[in-house]
Length: 493
Image 1 (spheres, one colour):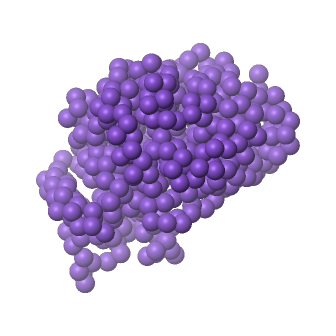
Image 2 (cartoon, one colour):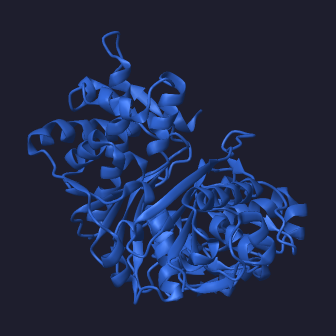
């Protein structure tokens, strides 16, 4: 068996590729950017061919920089962004750009679904409400608006399963991504064909299901020629990026929790029994026998990236973090609603939009930066509050994603939520989670508990500052009130 594991992360703004030793040490990590297209209001698309081209370049670059022989890679895991709807023909060629997780074009299709099957019945099957950003309404959108795509589609794939198909030729659907389709039975881990029939969807569009750590194929000679990988290298089905990041942060046992600080924000609570709540997201964990009760927000690290791109492009994220530290907790009255592409849990409002409130001539861009960070923290607390009300116990959070590199941002999240936060290797948590799936599937680790024990180490921790409790309680209350007062106006935009 080879001495290395390869993790591939199909993100929203870029793909990441990392090579790991069995102890979890990242030998190298490379990235490759690609665009998001916004052709109409509420639309957000990507070209899956851009993902594949980026993955090929990133793998070749990783092999070049590391000097590692591709034959030394024991197995490959792939994770990806949620709620894609990649329509491919019988040859595996995408028939159009895919709507991504921020796309809300399929609002009418949600109404169509509710008319065909009662929403409570669908919730009983899938554990999730019907939302336009989910995969199933997008399939119906193809049927209604792109009948040529629907007619010629052989399968509908997710982001990670598309890359797995390109690597191996295998057509699969991992279980952790099933929650975006309300015909996926969350308890049994299978397709509910009665729901599929009631909705008038061709069952053949839904790929065969696989456990996330299951080896579903090996790298083909054609893929080896494009990537520099060794033909015959095992590839597992992979999973949802948030779930792989949760595993890579060390959350594999019930009662543990992850705080997500990538392009999107939110949290994932690991549970060992089915427990759905309409305000939150329920998905299968990449660890068998576990679920994730998730809060997913559209405004995470992406909100700060937007601010940098539009207001202070000359600053690094580290410099922005330093500026935020110069402003007191509460941003001296400046509030930010981070609803940059509608909002997901717990408000589920596709009309929600980003808002700065409390500006004045005395305010600086440092106030804007800290307000964005605090707004993302308030969104996290909103989801944690819903989880507490649903009966979940929340202890220490494990932070992952780029925002976890900011001591200021991580600390204010601890202060806002009142939860201690631990930070392992934040930049590689997601690719590590994908690699751990490969390691378990290939037999490098005895199981998931062993894999986490051997690879995940906490680098630093943050305790909530009790002296700021009153400031942030007031800020959170104003944050909630601001949205509630503006929601009717947002709906009229």
